[in-house]
Length: 309
Image (cartoon, rainbow, N blue to C red; front, side):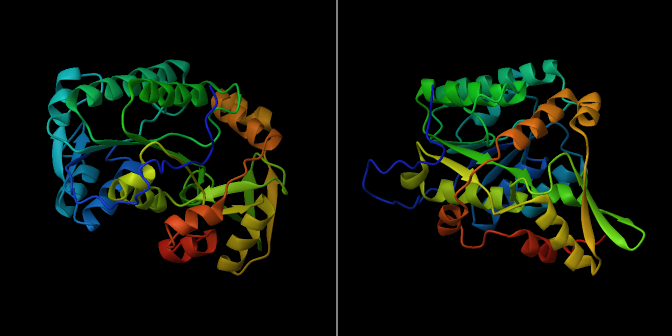
């Protein structure tokens, strides 16, 4: 099954703005994408229900302070999910395959099962708009199991006929503040990635995933039935290193981590970087900027987050 990488439904001929302000159930609300979506919706005056495992967690408490209603539940507990979906207008769905440190095939299978279960129950609940955060690279024949799981969830949503929007984010700028943070070595800044120095790498700020999700809920006539690939900038590792080098006022260079080293730690992540190298993604950043003019470049993300070496 092939679907376009970027498409919007204009069948009505109207770019309507929703006069509904929720509630929207955010699944994955205490995660980075779900939290960004919840905050973007709350800032626009939407009623948000945050589906959380532990309402007493710090992330859940911050959402509650921002105005979200907390609903305790578990994606493997159908009754809690059914109760959370009762009476909602929309659902933001983000699922993770990471359980612990690595991506296991069991966790990938669990993600697919949970995604399909949410879609089934959303249909029964009469949800008016499902926004699913999938992944750039689905439908590309990557051979990566966790890509396939997200592809299967997308297919299931379509087969059900749910009114839905698929978001397909690329690699996160925010990872340069955590997992892939550049390091200082002597008088240099060194960026270590499992990519060649001149391989194009699309990037997106997690904040912008939430912003586009909120825009999709506000403009259903444009986005229902559509697929939106999310990237704020496309840079090579060499350009990424130079950008951080300017911010740190240091000369910068890249170090290419061997794929075998990544695979030894996590087979799925190793396959992902191998795929990035063999088939660099092409994303229409200009088209997304028309939708969301505040889209961050990497340099703007560094300023906005106060990134420090």
